[in-house]
Every structure is written in structure tokens, then in C-alpha cells.
Length: 317
Ligand SMILES: Cc1cc2nc3c(=O)[nH]c(=O)nc-3n(C[C@H](O)[C@H](O)[C@H](O)COP(=O)(O)OP(=O)(O)OC[C@H]3O[C@@H](n4cnc5c(N)ncnc54)[C@H](O)[C@@H]3O)c2cc1C
Image (cartoon, rainbow, N blue to C red; front, side, top):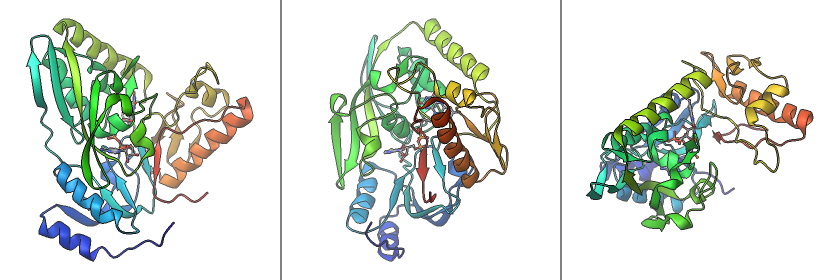
């Protein structure tokens, strides 16, 4: 990797000139669902795709590390934080309705909108297809890049195109070119593509049925996931059926790790594919448990677990 710069003087001048909000030495802990992690050198809050493009253009010309932070619900930030620029979209969260009839809506949802809230808003308007999203935390942008899903539904089912900033320019990519698959997309593997939002197509549904599905998903969560605990959701993806019919939680359970702790971190006794922060856990402790699960499952079943959670910053080996 090229030598890194830690002097952000001209970026700060640019941000000040353009009145883009930012913080220096910004603690990231409160931006994560784990409530774990150190500080970023600079934390920037672009309010539009154009401001995002401005920051990206600046960074593209310099040997500096950047990280696009969404709702922080699928990441583990290192205890030493992030030695670079963290960009946290703060666009308008309003839905932009492009076309609406009694039985169809075409709507643009911005990356910084809260994903569950967007699901709730569109469901309350009588449109079906985003009920599942009401139970998935995070920003809408994070759910796009992750192709978030649950209970047999995925975000890709309703996306028609995605708007991104890449090479310092705002661009639109048709859904068919986004390489959506189980918990991944083109954008997940291209850290220089920053998602600004997506266009969705939804059809009208029966309001009582929409409401019943939302309630059903909510209850299923309550019954299956650790309650009132800080976590980042599933740590590992489930293996594809050709590798194993078992879910990751079963493999971790069979490896004898249910309830295993390291300091303040615990492989959840309620759901073995979650690691929970029991209060004062450090990123290093969570990371130790991630590595332990990987090695024990490998020894026990010969299956290599694939991480869903994204590690941010430096963790060593
Ligand atoms: C209790 C709990 C339950 C969960 N259940 C589910 C579930 O059922 N299904 C599921 O799919 N997930 C689940 N998750 C995981 C998580 O909520 C989703 O993956 C969510 O979509 C992540 O969005 P985020 O905004 O929080 O992303 P972050 O955690 O902020 O970021 C995750 C990754 O996305 C990238 N990213 C974020 N925003 C953008 C953007 N605008 N442009 C480019 N890259 C971006 C980040 O750089 C990072 O690589 C759960 C999490 C928790 C805590």
C-alpha cells in the first residue's frame, strides 16, 4: 500500500469552504450497533451525492484510506479506530416518489434513510415488498450493498437501479448489472463505489396482509435473537447448500462454542451466529471469538465459515 497521509489540511479547507460538516478525532463507537471501536481521523457528513463526489475526488488523488459508514450495524471497528477519513452520508431521508398509481409506486430511497423506517413508510402507504426490511437495522445504503434480506426476501427483489458515486461522479447502474447475490453485490467488493440510493418498484398489497407480515417478522425476531444486547447481527454467512445444509449457528453450536466468552464478548447463548457485547467488550475480544469460531468449526466439520461482518481498521493477524 502507498504511504498514507495523515495531514488533512487541504481537505479541511475544502470542507470548510463548501460548508460540509465534519469532526476531527471523532469517536465512532456511537455509530455502531456493537457500541465498540476507536476514533476516525476525520468523520465527514456529506449532505448530497455531489458533496460525496467532492470528497471522493479529493481522496482519489491522494494515498489516504477512506471508509463509507452506514448505520454501523454490520461492522466491527478496531479499538485503535480508523486511520483515515470516514464518510457518513447525511442526505435527506425523504422518499422521492417518481410515479405512483393505485397499484404501483416507483420511488427513490436515499442511502442515508433508516432502512426499517423506509420499509415502514412504504408498507403504511399500502405497497408490498419491503415488510421484511422493517426488521433489519442500518441505513438503506448499507442494505443495498449487502443485499439485505430475511424470511425468504431480499432487497434485490424490488430494486430497479442503484445510484452511486464512483471516480468522483454520480452514476446510475441498472439492477441487472449490480451482481446481487446472497448478502453481497458489486458494491460490496468495490470500496470505491459509494451508494447514494436506489430506485424501487413496488406493487400495491392488501393493508391487513402487509401489517400481518410485519408483525409476523417482528415476532420471529423476538423469538430467535438475543434481546437487549449489542451485536452486529450474524457474524458469518450461512454456507451454500452444496457445502453444507447446516446453518452457521448450528456449525458453531456443534463446535461447542455456545455461550463461550472472551472478556466482555460472548458467542450468544441464544443465537450462536451472533456475538454480543456484554457491556465493556473490546474489538480485540470480539475478533478473538470470530477467529476461534472459524478455527473450531474448521476442525470440527471441515467447513470454512465466511464472514458477513466487515472489519474496519487494523486487527493484525
Ligand atoms: C440485530 C441485528 C439483526 C440483523 N439482521 C439482519 C438480517 O436479518 N438480514 C441482513 O441482511 N442483515 C442483518 N443485519 C446486519 C445489518 O443490519 C445489515 O447488513 C444492514 O443492511 C447493514 O447496513 P448498515 O447501514 O448498518 O451498514 P454498515 O454496518 O454501516 O456497513 C456495512 C458495509 O456496508 C458498506 N456501506 C454502508 N453504506 C454504504 C454506502 N452508502 N455505499 C457503499 N458502501 C456502504 C460499509 O462500508 C461496510 O462495508 C442485522 C444486524 C443486527 C445488529
